[in-house]
Amino acid sequence: MAKTTPNKEIIVRDAFRGLWYHDGALMRVLEPGRYEIPHRRRWNPADWFKRYPEIYVRQIDMRERDLTIKGQEILTSDKVAIRVSIVVRYRVVDPQMAVQIVDDYESRIYTDVQLAARRSLSSMTLEDILTNRNKLNEDILEEVTESATSFGVEIKRADVKDLIFPGDLQTIMNRVLTAERQSQAQLIEARTRAEVDRLEAQTRAERRRIEAQADEEAMRLSAQAEADAQHIQTEADIRDLQERAKAANVYVDHPVLVRLMELETLRDLSQVATARLYIDFDKSVDMADD
Image (cartoon, rainbow, N blue to C red):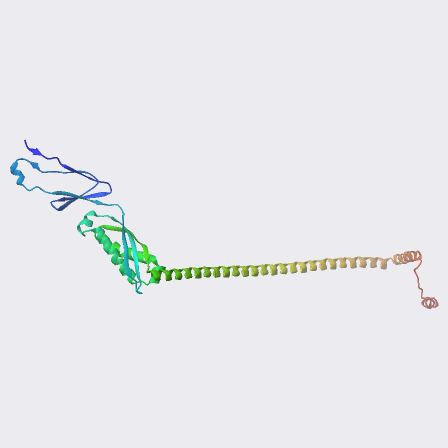
């Protein structure tokens, strides 16, 4: 009876992909699961010298991973040596390309990031790096993304983790940054004070405008009230004159009323001890002669 050896099993874990090689040739990409690798069968001693295919499965991690490029010393455009550490987040999207196009995709990413950082930093001054650190991240990401896509890797992000300056330069830069922060604080304070002064001046001008409008309205109302009072007084005087005119007409039509008023007046005067009555006798004699 022919003897056989049991098949070998391999498990491709979740978040991984398996590359199935048959005699060194990639035959297929395995999804997560359990697979059997068949062993050769022994039919008779003569079959021992026969050549059987070699099966090999390589598992590729498809998860996102971080790669840290540490302590790269690079010269800026103004000849300042700085050390920079960069963190790159990536994931394999095509395991076949990642394995067959480059020898080691992680080493290739490491080298590409190094070169991209050198090219970017060598075109920037120290001041540019301090004031616009994001530009360095953007330059590295843009350059490395295109390269990584060609061998089946997606670059998620590339960030500068640390920037280390020479010791004496570090002290100087700390002083410069402190001075800049103080100047910015003073500038903000000056702007705030100027804004407060502007608002106060605007408030004063608005208050003066409102007061002027109130005074003008008060003067208008006072003039209007005075005109109304004058109008009322005039109407009262007119009514009084009209009443007197009516009384005069009555006295003209009835002279006896005038004589009666004279007698009433003489009566009232006779009751006052200090009253004096002066009569022009000459005029009375002239009138009697006539």
